[in-house]
Image 1 (tube, rainbow, N blue to C red):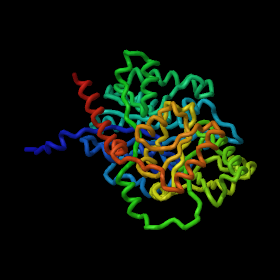
Image 2 (image 1 turned 120 degrees about the vertical axis):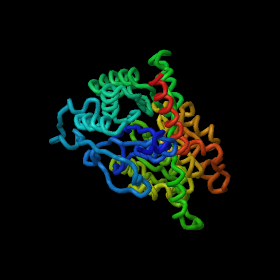
Image 3 (image 1 turned 60 degrees about the horizontal axis):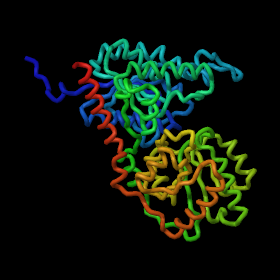
Image 4 (image 1 turned 90 degrees about the horizontal axis):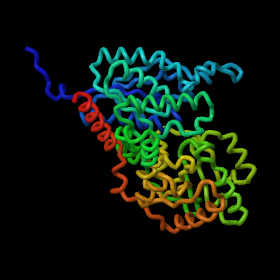
Length: 428
């Protein structure tokens, strides 16, 4: 007689397809898949991760705070970055970059995924953008298995003139329509993205749309806090304002900020003795270094190298204030870093469009000072006021009650309930 563990029998398995997964470095996108995989077992779902081989990553390595749970089953399928690994003298096969530079991944990921589906008694499939090939793999495996499939876009995929490359733009639009049609549910991370897709695909498909926001992992924050030694600010030390993460020119262009700093320095309102802005792991360092030098504010702005994830959180927890940048062309998007900023609880200066989802989230949390990213005049007006409030200790801290809803554990619970729902619908 074979005894069956009732609890084990009730558990389900989900195949999670994601490009961004440890040991990749330099992207906040790794947090979403890693934390879902970490917390889903608490809600009755055991994840199996299908990702790419580390050689495809431009930057990889162990990072404290991004450890993969020992019990998590992770499978890696071979894939290459066509532009970086198949190019010569700046030229590379164009067909291998549609829908993105990691198209080769699907040639190995689909067969490996099919083997997992045959061998592992999987109940559902989940795939995540912004690497479009992950959805191409998810679509192939969902059609092969006919299992419920949750496709996560996070932010809108096809955006009219974006992507600018005509072939990629066409591929994005076609793939997006196939995914929305075939998927059991489509997940976005912001209210405006849900509204945009509802309008784009109509009422018939709008019922598939769900929102699960980004967030922070309380366990890792607690580890970071435990390692912070008590320290007092040195009298006369400048205020430290930190931006942690990549500063994309298309989405977080710092030109107006640099122009505002140049004007404020010329007017005697800021100096290196009063203010130090740290752009941590910004990317584009050579370009930004030139811009800062041309404006004579390179003594105020520091272009700092990347840190381990745990160290990055410690820095967020200890600086005087945090800086967020988000352009108006991303009003339907919210930087994943915002939620970590909210948990860090430091005063926050947000350079973003007041009409966008980023600003709305800050107002809902009752935290943050807002100025438009593309207005040097507005930044030059708001920044001295923000500095004065910091120096006088008058900047309000975040409300813990309003921030707790953004924990990764809570969001994994939302995903688990959605997985339960699509599985139930599939058998009725």
